[in-house]
Image (cartoon, rainbow, N blue to C red; front, side):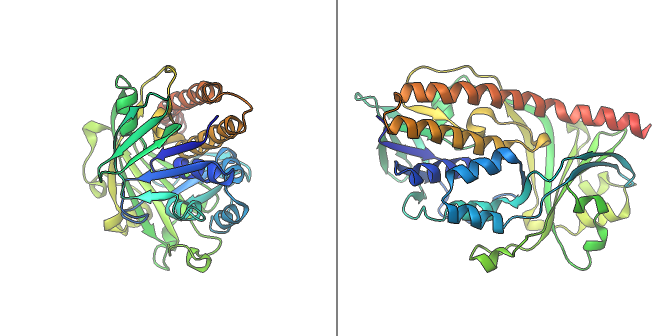
Length: 371
């Protein structure tokens, strides 16, 4: 019977799982290497679809879920593809399902009620399997923790996965994305394409395979009014280019619509960063043991379909459900993990494949329409 769980990594998936276990009165601890929740930027806007929102509703206490909903943005109704001169190529209705959220605000809501459960400043360094079938984790500060199960929720560079599955591969696509954040002010509001008020926008620039993705984050209620860290409204954007054609974004955007160039030019410099696009290579199942994986630690994917966070949250809810059943004695822990891992790997890597194909498909469709 399952009695205790330790989660490695304080991202969205790890926090969601820990919250669900805590709500179900299963002894759980979460270990995060950063010394505090706001040690560094946690990323920007993300779109939560039904998968992510249903997982949060299932795992969070009612008050924390209500806080998350109050701090979110409005629903989105479409996905638009535009040319670099802002001519519309394609509009895909998405209905009113899902909403946009700020990642740092969502993390703060997820931590409500987990005081003493989330342990900051504990950098995982390795683990050992114990004779009684349990697992002991070691941390850089000298701390040790034992549990019936350890869950790797420590992201694409998972230290747990490197020990647990040393042959698992990360595939470097050679693509890069420059992410930026531009605050909404009276000066920047007129620069925003009208389509952005209704949902995510992708700008394509042929023949150079350049692209600009944009998402608007306007809070229904300012987070500070809800007792959460203050975050102003903003536009999130990400500029992509082939690896052999990457340089200064302002130079690469010569010939683009002046509003788009001005929007990027007015970014917050301290919150602009470059990410190499990588994704997980296929992995099979693994043998019996008190370790499992969640989210990007298992099936990291490119950001092209906006599915990474939603899949991590769904993994968390599914794993929580199985672990609660094991805790109640409804099934052995190994059976619960088998149930979780079979579906998690199958659905996760199906989404990895779809996310890898998505940019090429959009470029091909847009090229035909632009031509």
